[in-house]
Length: 424
Ligand code: NIG
Ligand code: FE
Image 1 (cartoon, rainbow, N blue to C red):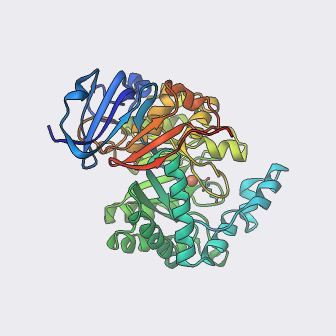
Image 2: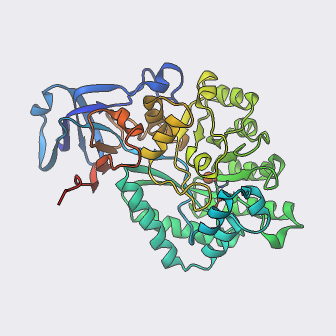
Image 3: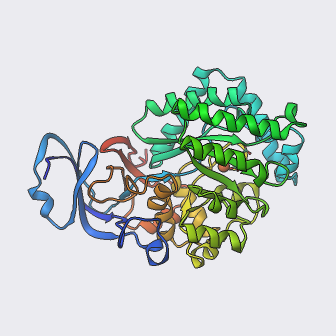
């Protein structure tokens, strides 16, 4: 075995090891975290080389500068996978938030030129350097909360030229971090007011931009907001076709506020994931299950906007793999970090704590096409690891908002160390 340069020992180790072959977890595997008490793991050059139980870690060969972590009394688990975020934005929407709390409807605000359009205006006016600084700051906060793989969408540019600028800024931010960033071109987020009479033309241009995005390697997936009064399934067709021709994956904001048939369409179009899905039909669920496509539940937005959250039990009963993510964005979900998303997934969506952990790790990895790379602590996977400040992982769903992530390793490198709070 290769000499280890990182050894984490005496842990309650959640391996998330597959029961059989590696595929999105459903059925009994949907709640199996593969716990090993008195477990250890060793990695070398960012890749896990061995895991085990008991004292065998003593015998591991180590490099001279190897890092040793004694995790007695702590849970050690895969780094979180945040499979749906909109980190690339400027400005805030506090006024809109207050208006909506007093009853204004999310889609009505959007229709009047607020909502997403307000963030589009603020983001367009922000220079590359300032936008880069904002994204970096948000990535740093996500890392401190245990995220080691994160999806980042564009979507606050709307017009393709501005979307491309934002994707280039995201690429610059992705290059400078050790965590794994999966970039998505959110091509159809809202129709610019200036294009109100030319929806199909706008969609055509967005679909054309997919080729440039692919040629420049700016994103690995394409996304659209499919919703009443925003874009419909017909609008998404040319986009899905362009994505498939360019070799990019498809993911959709599907049936978030209304059932518009987007979940079933996502399955038919072989999407990588169908996200939100709070109002997905039974047919949509059956289609996802058949195609083994993860549904990404985003309870932060249901909580913050105040609509009925997706019922996880429906999805589990239909054998749909479930991922859970923050949906971090300035409009519907200012939520940061998976620990609180897990708590919301348990309390609002009806997941068990273990199901929520599967959803925030290995199934999130599957939702990003990375199920063979991260999300589990087994030989050959990236050494993406968090050490929790608890000996019982169910506390992730329970210590609501309190700091619970102590240390974070991305590909074997320590990227965050949060000391305990000090009383003085
Ligand atoms: O995932 N609903 C569409 N997109 C985002 C929100 C965007 C916004 O309001 O700025 C979401 O909820
Ligand atoms: Fe979203």
